[in-house]
Image (cartoon, rainbow, N blue to C red; front, side):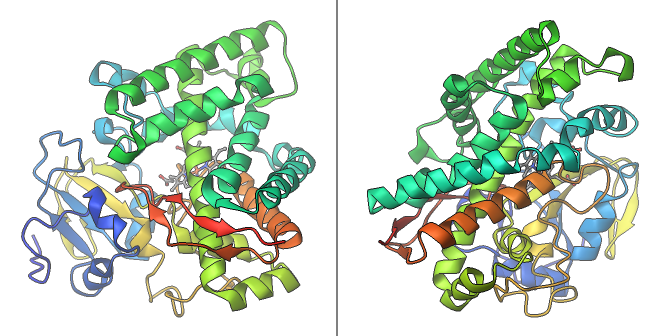
Amino acid sequence: MPPCPALPEGFDFTDPDLYRRRVPLPEFALLRRTAPVWWNAQPYGSAGFGDDGYWVVTRHADVREVSTRPEVFSSHRNTSVIRFRPGIPSEHLDHQRLMMLNMDPPEHTRVRQIVQRGFTPRAVRALEGALRRRARAIVTAARERGSGDFVTDVACELPLQAIAELIGVPQEDRAKIFDWTNKMIAYDDPELAATEETGARSALELISYAMGLAAARAACPARDIVSRLVAAEDEGNLRSDEFGLFVLMLAVAGNETTRNAISHGMHAFLTHPEQWDLYKRERPATAAEEVVRWATPVTSFQRTATRDTRLGGADIAEGQRVGLFYASANHDPEVFDAPGTFDITRDPNPHLGFGGGGPHFCLGKSLAVLEIGLIFDAIADVLPGIRLAGEPRRLRSAWLNGIKELRVEYGA
Ligand code: HEM
């Protein structure tokens, strides 16, 4: 194993407390220079499934390589501590393996082809008008409050509505979905009063809700993704357990990530006023991608080596876990000029915030980019004088770069 003497004994890149101080961590820069694929001799994450350690992949090129070689770096093996773990207890891990994120080709290819039908550019464009109106209403309501927490007032709302719109969740059920996903995700942060147990219960409630929705749409199809996935018998179909997990994954993957991109984006704009002025004047189409690079809402994902292999000068043994640290890759100076500069005109911007390419590349990327653009457009129109009124409070999480509170004055 390559030594890395500059990091203290016991250092663990999956320790949730690390990310409360600063992202990207300065330790990533050190590793990219000295040991870009580095053995971290600690159990992988707080789940502690008995491993002796995991590889930390820090360079852009290596993260891409792992992401695009599923035959060597599996998403299915060792699913139990997947970074998207929604707190499902061990007796449900077999179910978790059915989640698309945790599959390898060819099984993954079958499911991805089915669900992709709901995410065509046309399907996403069809949501634009409703989401634009929704974004405007959200920021108008915030203006009336005068000041408040940007995360709850603004950032949470649009991603939730977008997923609910996409899945066809009736308005009166949307708050339930929101509450369930919050509980599933917050288990590492004691302040949010969620536990593994409440997280697990919420996941199961959401799955059973989704299965009910599927049954209703199979009987009476509507113009939404559920109907498209459950009613198209002749084109291949999701089994009902796969469907429940798919909705669970959408609810988590679509909500928490986009919310944090919006919160970090707002913080970045307010701490870089020249970028905010530029946005208000010119609305560059490149801004949303820079917000995602800057925020990198998903800090890391993991894979497991299916055979002995070599990567970035390191010898990886079959069965070892490999952590893809997008938060590091997105600041790799080999790829980005001045990576520490928030530059909304950055172009090209080959960031890995949505994954490193390959079969699992984010299914909801166009929806997320659309949402981010719509919300900042609405803020620029309705709240041009928005100001920070405190330091952000960060989520305690090793895999989600989250802000749980951002106090602001919304301005006149
Ligand atoms: C996968 C990030 C928004 C649905 C992923 C992955 C990342 C990611 C890093 C894993 C890629 C890999 O393993 O190679 C983000 C970020 C978002 C976002 C940063 C917002 C800024 C969304 C939205 C949806 C969504 C809005 C859906 C409505 C998914 C799904 C997958 C995924 C279904 C799994 C794809 C597969 O396994 O084939 N996302 N995502 N994401 N994302 Fe997103």
